[in-house]
Amino acid sequence: MTTQEKIMTTQEVADRFFELAQEGKFDVIQDELYDESVKSVEPATSTWQNVEGLGQVKEKAQQWQSIVEEMHGGYTNKPQVAGNFFSCVMGMDVTVKGQPRMKMDEIAVYEVRDGKIVLEQFFF
Image 1 (tube, one colour):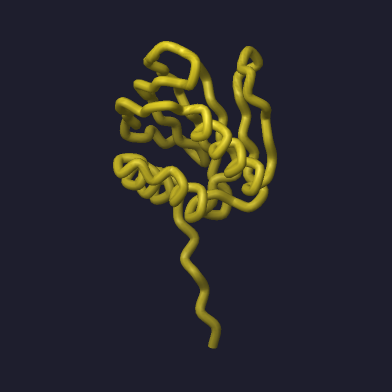
Image 2 (image 1 turned 45 degrees about the vertical axis):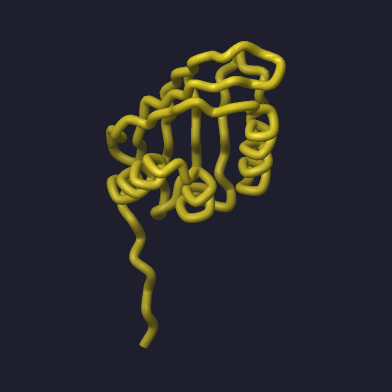
Protein backbone atom coordinates (compact mmCIF):
# COMPACT_ATOMS: atom_id res chain seq x y z
CA MET A 1 0.00 0.00 0.00
CA THR A 2 1.28 3.47 -0.86
CA THR A 3 0.37 6.71 0.78
CA GLN A 4 -0.22 9.78 -1.30
CA GLU A 5 0.44 13.27 -0.10
CA LYS A 6 -2.70 15.38 -0.27
CA ILE A 7 -2.48 18.11 -2.89
CA MET A 8 -3.63 21.45 -1.51
CA THR A 9 -6.36 23.38 -3.27
CA THR A 10 -5.77 26.94 -4.42
CA GLN A 11 -7.77 28.15 -1.41
CA GLU A 12 -5.60 26.10 0.96
CA VAL A 13 -2.41 27.44 -0.64
CA ALA A 14 -3.77 31.00 -0.39
CA ASP A 15 -4.74 30.50 3.25
CA ARG A 16 -1.29 29.12 4.14
CA PHE A 17 0.37 31.95 2.19
CA PHE A 18 -1.64 34.51 4.18
CA GLU A 19 -0.87 32.81 7.50
CA LEU A 20 2.88 32.84 6.83
CA ALA A 21 2.83 36.38 5.36
CA GLN A 22 1.26 37.69 8.59
CA GLU A 23 4.33 36.33 10.39
CA GLY A 24 6.73 37.82 7.80
CA LYS A 25 7.91 34.32 6.81
CA PHE A 26 8.31 34.87 3.09
CA ASP A 27 11.27 32.48 2.96
CA VAL A 28 9.04 29.72 4.38
CA ILE A 29 6.39 30.59 1.79
CA GLN A 30 8.96 29.94 -0.94
CA ASP A 31 10.20 26.71 0.66
CA GLU A 32 6.74 25.30 1.37
CA LEU A 33 4.48 26.60 -1.35
CA TYR A 34 6.57 27.33 -4.46
CA ASP A 35 7.14 24.84 -7.27
CA GLU A 36 10.74 24.24 -8.35
CA SER A 37 9.94 25.76 -11.77
CA VAL A 38 8.16 28.88 -10.42
CA LYS A 39 8.28 32.03 -12.55
CA SER A 40 8.50 35.55 -11.12
CA VAL A 41 7.23 38.37 -13.35
CA GLU A 42 7.78 42.08 -12.68
CA PRO A 43 6.05 45.05 -14.36
CA ALA A 44 7.60 46.19 -17.63
CA THR A 45 8.67 49.45 -15.97
CA SER A 46 10.51 47.71 -13.12
CA THR A 47 14.27 47.61 -12.83
CA TRP A 48 13.95 44.06 -11.45
CA GLN A 49 14.30 41.16 -13.86
CA ASN A 50 11.83 38.35 -14.50
CA VAL A 51 13.30 35.06 -13.33
CA GLU A 52 12.45 31.39 -13.55
CA GLY A 53 13.19 28.59 -11.11
CA LEU A 54 13.01 28.48 -7.33
CA GLY A 55 16.74 29.12 -6.94
CA GLN A 56 16.57 32.33 -8.97
CA VAL A 57 13.41 33.49 -7.17
CA LYS A 58 15.17 33.00 -3.83
CA GLU A 59 18.26 34.81 -5.14
CA LYS A 60 16.10 37.75 -6.25
CA ALA A 61 14.57 37.90 -2.76
CA GLN A 62 18.05 37.90 -1.21
CA GLN A 63 19.12 40.72 -3.54
CA TRP A 64 16.11 42.75 -2.35
CA GLN A 65 16.98 42.08 1.30
CA SER A 66 20.57 43.20 0.66
CA ILE A 67 19.45 46.71 -0.39
CA VAL A 68 16.95 47.20 2.44
CA GLU A 69 18.40 49.44 5.11
CA GLU A 70 15.36 49.30 7.38
CA MET A 71 11.89 47.74 7.17
CA HIS A 72 9.52 49.97 9.12
CA GLY A 73 6.38 47.90 8.49
CA GLY A 74 4.38 46.00 5.95
CA TYR A 75 1.09 44.29 5.27
CA THR A 76 -0.53 41.58 3.20
CA ASN A 77 -4.30 41.64 2.80
CA LYS A 78 -6.39 38.47 2.81
CA PRO A 79 -6.12 36.70 -0.56
CA GLN A 80 -8.92 36.62 -3.11
CA VAL A 81 -9.19 33.27 -4.92
CA ALA A 82 -10.51 32.70 -8.44
CA GLY A 83 -9.94 29.34 -10.10
CA ASN A 84 -6.23 28.49 -10.00
CA PHE A 85 -5.25 32.04 -9.03
CA PHE A 86 -5.18 34.18 -5.93
CA SER A 87 -4.23 37.79 -5.46
CA CYS A 88 -3.17 39.90 -2.49
CA VAL A 89 -2.75 43.60 -1.98
CA MET A 90 0.62 44.01 -0.29
CA GLY A 91 2.75 46.89 0.83
CA MET A 92 5.69 48.01 2.88
CA ASP A 93 7.16 51.02 4.57
CA VAL A 94 10.86 50.73 3.82
CA THR A 95 14.15 52.58 3.62
CA VAL A 96 16.29 51.33 0.76
CA LYS A 97 20.01 52.07 1.01
CA GLY A 98 20.80 55.49 -0.46
CA GLN A 99 17.13 56.48 -0.79
CA PRO A 100 14.61 58.23 1.45
CA ARG A 101 12.02 56.22 3.36
CA MET A 102 9.09 55.26 1.12
CA LYS A 103 5.81 53.43 1.14
CA MET A 104 5.26 50.86 -1.60
CA ASP A 105 1.98 49.16 -2.53
CA GLU A 106 1.38 46.40 -5.05
CA ILE A 107 -1.01 43.73 -6.19
CA ALA A 108 0.54 40.28 -6.31
CA VAL A 109 -1.08 37.52 -8.37
CA TYR A 110 -0.20 33.87 -7.86
CA GLU A 111 -1.03 30.88 -10.03
CA VAL A 112 -1.36 27.48 -8.35
CA ARG A 113 -0.96 24.15 -10.12
CA ASP A 114 -0.93 20.75 -8.39
CA GLY A 115 -0.90 22.42 -4.98
CA LYS A 116 2.16 24.61 -5.63
CA ILE A 117 2.68 28.23 -6.72
CA VAL A 118 4.00 28.18 -10.29
CA LEU A 119 3.79 31.92 -11.02
CA GLU A 120 4.10 35.13 -9.04
CA GLN A 121 3.39 38.37 -10.85
CA PHE A 122 3.57 41.86 -9.39
CA PHE A 123 1.74 45.03 -10.36
CA PHE A 124 2.84 48.38 -8.94
